[in-house]
Image (cartoon, rainbow, N blue to C red; front, side):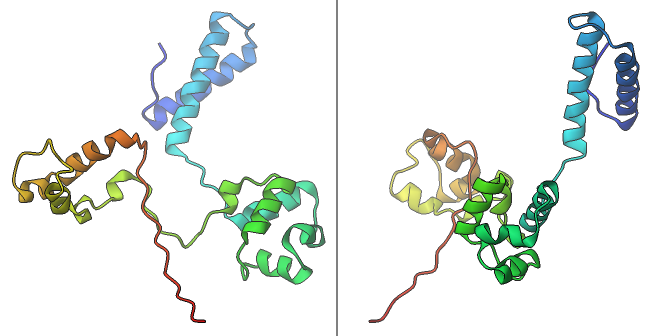
Length: 189
């Protein structure tokens, strides 16, 4: 019987069984082939959970693609700019510009998701990183934006997450993202 892998021992047993089935080379559609396919799926799931692979840094991704395609720094000049810009970028002294990211994505096939990473950014990745008590709960009650809530403002603050999730539900947000704040710039003429 095949079941979800939960321990390293079960993982090792599943790998050994896959090795045996691969040696048998079962015909497609046979019970052995179906068993092999199912084992591969549960092994993949276990490996994805226990051994996640992090995205490379933008510089690592660029260097990897250069190695894959046999490119030199000189070959990156059309995408980055001058020879000095390429050198500064690869040494980490120059950040990627939007123009560079677009060119590297389009011409070298490096995913924008990888190039847009900021190694110094500290954005919450999960909903539990949101401090629900920082929302203006009392103001929401005052404006009658939480019409289903019957209680005191203190109770509202204590149940902030539940109230706000209900409030935001019509927006159909799968995942909440933090706001990105911009600094106002005043130009004097």
